[in-house]
Amino acid sequence: MKLYVGNLSFNTSESQLRDLFAEHGEVTSASLVMDRDTGRPRGFGFVEFRNDEHARAAMAALSGKNVDGRDLTVNEAKPREGGGGGGRGGSGGGRSRGGW
Image (tube, rainbow, N blue to C red; front, side, top):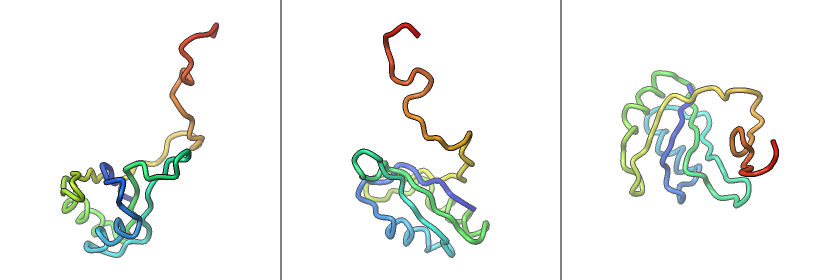
């Protein structure tokens, strides 16, 4: 099972994320989502467990827990919608004027 972890401190490393969740079971992967432009963490990431029961235990234990001054949001990750193109800025593309 894959978990979404939000409201992370921007100082959190992937190894710290892994260690935090590994207290609840075998973590198969832990990754932070990075900003493409700055290369810095965006404040959320994903942790995947081999065992769904351990993932649920981690979710229950860590959701709302204060880590580095921030209350974590932990939910079951939802599959990405669409083709994963990763567009920026929604339907208007950031344009406020123009004859579209």
